[in-house]
Length: 295
Image (tube, rainbow, N blue to C red; front, side, top):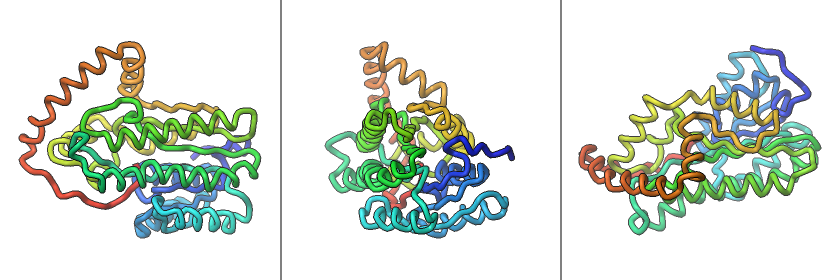
């Protein structure tokens, strides 16, 4: 436990976190409470949200309240924004758009429009709804912050991940645009672009065949803890950093894409040709699961 800093946006915040029932979202909520904040923990799984609140209450730091919210539904986001201001008795000062789902394992042309709509409805439109609805509150608060959780997928363009890549690329562009529109004001904007974090996104999402097995294996052995990512992001937000690319592999991908684009794309082509072999090794293609969770 450390001393809270009232001069920093992530300390003593009136915060809303979507996808707060697990993973990075839960880590954000717990850390914000430790920093003296009052946190609304929103999740499509109400029981998971309540578990996060119980963790916060057990520590005796900050305050927390669990709320059901499906971020792909505008009426749920509207209700969340209204509830937040009523609960806090003042405008929200920190909004963390985190809720998201994993999807992958099939090339464009085989994904299916239903899966496209499902993934973008949560990963992109959920961020749009959250930003559109909460920004008026944040601006009225004067000194406030917005954190959007994207992914290295926003710029990596990995094969057989188009629906995920497109959603996260949209989140990156959304965040950059809001940052430009907020220049010279009291609103700080941060977009988080990690690679593998130890969450349940690969299990709860719609990731087919060998891609699911590979994602879970890589996440197990190379993924960093969501607690570390949350702390790093909140500290960066306090320094008003727009981009948070927290892992060395993410920064390497960013650099390779910018400075060696042809080599990078050729490498992705080799990876794409290796994916069928991963499917054969997996031995099965699991049925898609419609669970939505924090990323």
